Amino acid sequence: MKKTYSIKEVADYFQLPISTIRYYDKKGLLPFVSKNAAGYRVFSKSDFGFIKTICCLKNTGMPIRDIRTYINLCMQGTTSIQQRGELLQQHKTNVLKQQQVLHDNLKEITTKIQRYASDDSVNIIKSQIKFVKNEKKVLNLEDPFK
Image (cartoon, rainbow, N blue to C red; front, top):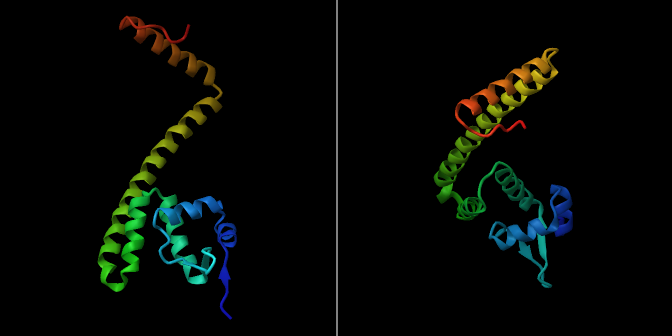
């Protein structure tokens, strides 16, 4: 027996607020979702795959307009396979760039944590402050460490 799901059940399953699902529908991301005679959204198990993909794309920074484009391409069936692949390949490239930025920033944070955990942290920080003060003085700029 096939089961349908309410918007609340879908929201709970994906750990999303109901308002987010309504927003996605309003933005045209859920053309595959049916409505019952009363006008309420009725979800089927096959809708979960689309919603999972929408969440994945959103969580990895794809703009709503691009997600809508992707979903619309999906609704076209097999004729849009190449376009979908190209869209996702471009998104993957963007995600990998974001990942590199996060990696670089994490290295900087780790460096700072190691510096503060060092037995010589007080002297290291005093030396950095002295350098900044001297640089500002030479450039006739205000001392930020008053």
